[in-house]
Length: 255
Image (cartoon, rainbow, N blue to C red; front, side, top):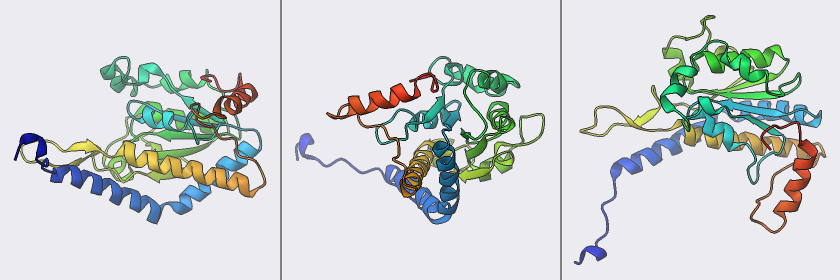
């Protein structure tokens, strides 16, 4: 058979990864819908009163903060706290140690519109480092509700790097579990000395989108037209989105 006509061998490890992620998302469905509804009610209460939903993560958790921000089909009143030094887009190694620096989250909060009655989602897979813990504590000091997205099992196996000895899951009002393995990577492959392929982004994204869906449904059930972004590539998107931007200009700094 010519090479071009051969069917490529299917990697069982790719299939294992996909099945593992499906299993974790199924656990979210089976075990966390009550927490999702609780959080959606809290967010809807805030948005109905003119508040904002803030989302924060560092390192690769910042991908999940961006997931809810300025996205087609997503809620409009979302302020993503995206600090470039804490991302992997400037200096990846620096983001690792910067996340451990006490006081850094307090400096970030000085420049963010987190207010009493708002809701803040803090995302950290380990939940052990100073910045996400202090982001949660600082938001609560301002009177905001804090939702945490973390790997509960992993977090419970590591020591806090915060002076209080607390982890993110200890300082949140509602905790979501991504069910991640210790160290996040899921799949063991012969010949590779460490597990590969993280799950926190895939599972976290599904969980956060489910939360956004529940929030929109909660607002609609109250007779409130949910503010939702439309695709900028659709014919009606630009006009609709421009109206949202005008309404929130000055409140959400990255619009």
